[in-house]
Image 1: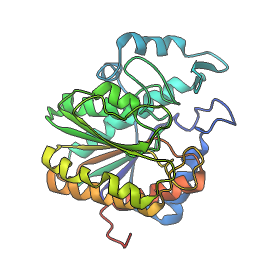
Image 2: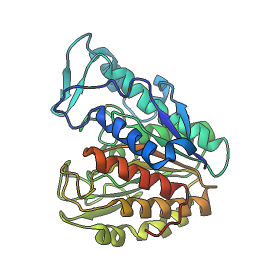
Image 3: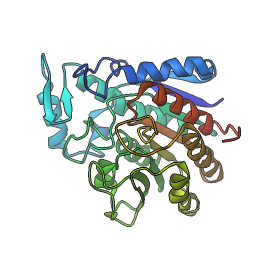
Length: 310
């Protein structure tokens, strides 16, 4: 087993409201299923460090980053936009979430046949170059991609996003960056009402209609794998959102755990072929606790190269 799970110290403490769907119970649900499945015992575990501000600036406007630090409240909750709130602990949690991606890149790049999963929150893929959005303050996966390019002089990095919502922030930040290929599946039309048509030639899009099931998903994304092999990324990053699950009422797609296992296994196969198995996966959405936990287990089993029938 080469999978290492990274966590951030304050990611469990960011809590804007008991009614908010993006809440600490998401991480507890994942941990419960990791224990129940036995994966917790065979995975490695790491505590992330907070991201250095200079690495946030690889993906974000310096004035925006400064504004987040300045707006962090001493008490109560402030709202950066209608869905994205900050408590006194939120900034620290967001810094750990972004830092986990950088630490995971370091770990994966320090060897071969290594995969990492960042069980962190707040998520990141809606955060744009200069704005918070959709529960996200910093774009964790875009920061990790640009960090990998800077730190390891990589020429090609791939990002794969299968959240039910389009990763508008990631596309906004890396669109047109020829060093990064983004493969993105999402329900469309749906929040945030973007992603189709794509904004740049380095984006591969697989929009799915409401009600699409696993067969439709697999058919829509199957062209990605040859495209990725042709691109030959030196590292694969995943925005791992599990809110396209049939039990998740945040969207209207009908994926199951088997589908998350399948795409994860496919991506592991690509990584084995082109980048020594190096994958960093970062948690995005997934809001029904049991489905989220089960889906993460299926995802990790796929990433480890588990060939069970799925």
